[in-house]
Image (cartoon, rainbow, N blue to C red):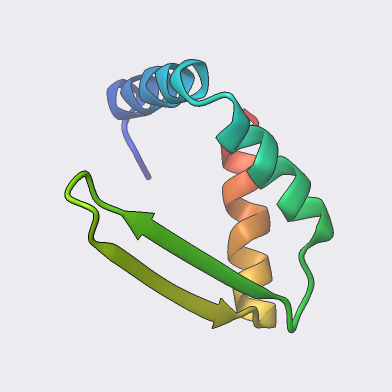
Length: 76
C-alpha cells in the first residue's frame, strides 16, 4: 500500500498530466468503455528525431481486469 504522501504526489502529477494533455484521458476513458477481450491495442511513438517505434497487443481477460482497476484508481 502506498503511503499518503506518495498518493498525494501521484494525484498532483495526474492532475498536471490531465491539464497538459486533456485529450489523452478522454481517449482512455472512451477506450475503457469500448475495450473487450480480443481487442487489439496499438501504440506508436515518433521521437523528436523522427525515429518511429510501434507495438501492439491482443487484450486478454487479465488485461481487462488491470485496465478496470487502473481506471478506478484514476477516478479517485
